[in-house]
Amino acid sequence: MEGLLTSLYIQFCIVLICIILIAPILGKYISHVMQRKHTFLDRFLNPIASFTYKKIGINPHQDQDWKTYLTALLSLNLAGIVFLTFLQKAQTYLPYNPQQLQSVSWLQSFNTAISFTTNTDWQSYTPESTLSPFIQMIGLTVQNFLSAMSGLAVAFVFMRSFKSQKEITRETPLGNFWVDCVRSLLWILLPLCLVLGIIYISLGVPQNFSNFIHATTLEGQQILIPQGPIASQEVIKILGSNGGGYFNANSAHPYENPSFISNIIQMITMLIIAASLPFAFSHKIGSKHQGRILFIAMAILLTMSILIASSSLNSMSLEGVETRFGKPSTLLYSILTTASGCGATNGALASLPPLSAFSLFFNMLIAGIGFGGVGSGFYNLILYVILAVFLAGLMVGRTPEYLGKKIESFEIKMVVIAILIPPLCILGLTALACSIFEATSLPHSFSEILYTFTSSTTNNGSSFASIQADHPFYQWATAISMLVGRYGVMFACLAIAGSFSQKIKIPKSSGAFPTKGALFCGLLIAVIIITNGLIYFPALSLGSIAEYLQP
Image (tube, helix red, strand yellow):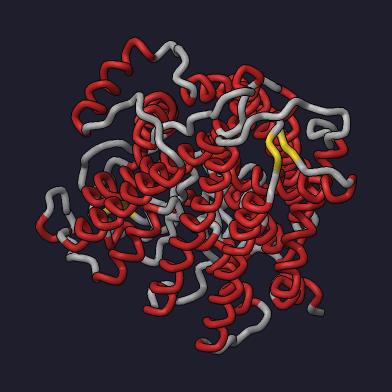
């Protein structure tokens, strides 16, 4: 037991140390990209960006209000849903289909299109036997980039809504959605993917256009194993907190995750952009303490989840564990993939002990705040920051304010909407599913249903893999939860950002509640845990908690 725990903690420390070293540097770079400041890539990428703006008819110097920004975001994502749906329906007639796969049904195509467009990557199908390499490359990989871009764009808007000291007396523009997409793609996602893709290929992840390779089983049987452009999809799958696998086994497959070293790199990669955004925020507002507190809060929440899960490591069986990695790596990967909003898996989540399953629920139900998805982790955390400051203002009898912006009724209404949207979807759809499908092995069956809607609503995409995910009810229900969970929260965040951007920054007074010390960090963590505990504890007590207490 001590050896397993030691291995788990050592791997976690390696991941955390790498994040601590990389995040401030990458955060500063992301801040420069967001504010259109000079970077070392400008010489090569500015001409490409200018050409792109010209071809799509965008004026890069024209700023948008939050409603126009939201409309542009929704239009791009709607186009992605339509494009990917019809792409799957036309699969029979498209090139690079070595298995001669047939067209996907309308309902499955619709569910998959919504899944990858919303950054959820929930897969209710077997990828290697349902979608051709062409669809995986042109359809799914492209949406992996676009969904990550959308999350980053909303995070950028939130950051811009808070003025720096030089912007006290004027309104702050929120930016242009199309410019944010182009810059986040060309300056952030593509360069990182290029570097990491080369590393993945060097570690053994295939990147080719071969149809199959011949292999021999232990029994001497000849089989064909599909290959393709796997590394290019794998890298954005992890970096963009997408999580959808090229193969059904996901990151337990040796083509997606070939070694212990690649496993460590994937765990670092799935956190790195989300962990960098608090530091980007610091550079934007000109206060390194604010971003540092947000980063520490994220790290503490993640560490709490690790400690809860590690207490059940001794009771963890080898069922569903990839033997190349072992129990500690499988458990740590599962915790990080739910904490990051990625959803990739290197083992069977349904085989985890109840306390470990509780940690997975914990990570997703707090909106993936430790560290969260690309962009979504940051803007979800800011929602709770606003709520914590509001509660602190009530306690000290002052009008609450954060970074010089007064928090008034409109902002609190939007925060409440954003916080209540996920439980309405999760608990409502879980209750509906339980009324339709008979639970045969409570509380585990209840946990499977609850996990399904928790994962889809929070845009995580991982699964206990025990429900009939391709059933029409689950296809429609998860599609609804993915759409509402993604765009409902984005709507509230953009509305808050629009309101803050129009407010004049007020000078800091001695009576204002401090937001850069240990006291505020503790308050923020307490608000996150208590708020979600009050909402979700009854449901969890019927699932993983009840399963843990069973004799």
